[in-house]
Image (cartoon, rainbow, N blue to C red):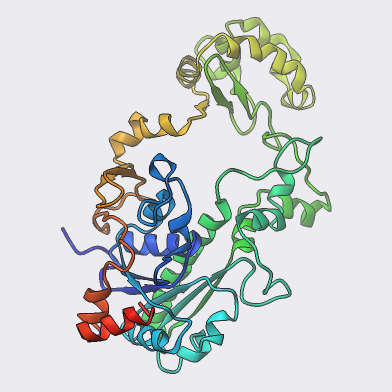
Length: 409
């Protein structure tokens, strides 16, 4: 097996929470040596995020932290003080990438901004992640995934037209920003290979979320029209929705352009009429005209709902897919973990952890085994202090004791 794709890279991660650590996790997944620098005592903020086993908070058992920090090493270092910053600068001497998500200007106040480092470290790729970026009038605003989804415009078109806007579950803008930071770092590495120069990569949660906008900005630019919320439906076809069925929910999405035509089946009937068991429905305007369905969706739902309510999600999805219609389950977490497709592809992997025990972890963004590094558990807080600060930077055991006593590590 060849070495993983990024095995010659060293990354220093002084980011906390989700976006920055997710960027570091992706780099570590392909072999980069990611050293996570955490505040002494408290560690990464996400060590205090749940879920926790038996709902008991513990710095080493946070599901969020364990997920976001696989395959990394951890040192503790207080970079708010001069002694810690000196050690931090020594760590950076052999680094290719720095990931930080402090408030814009904070690293510069500590003498660790990109402009402070680039003269001594001209090949360093300095990845900065913040709610609104390093420049612009919102630069100093605080924010998170929720504010990014709101200010990006994505939230405005999510939800029912007669209700307030909604956001999707979880922290989508944080994960999007983490992926863009990863892509930015990889692009900067390619640039460095060609030009022998590092640079700062500036990633904004707001811009990451705005890049996931579908049609809204383009529609306004092109037509001057502001897209409005319209349930969870596709803008140009119907049905494209989420429906309750006998034992859960299914996504109903016959095709982006409406129903497959009657000629799509050997029976000379539309797949939807075959699904509902009544080929006479093909004579109904709602089955012949997609715009009729779009405008008279309540009437269409009355035709569809009895079938959905009398069949399970498995029955509906199986039959619809046999008719070449892309229906899908709406899985909960338990169904996802038990899903046969993901199991066969090895998406979830079990890892032992000395404090949290043996748990399942999500897998890779893509399959490419020749570039992949084995998945390793997240580090304990300061687990690699002696290995890195002592073994690599040359601090003696006595030095480390003194630094520990001073609260530097």
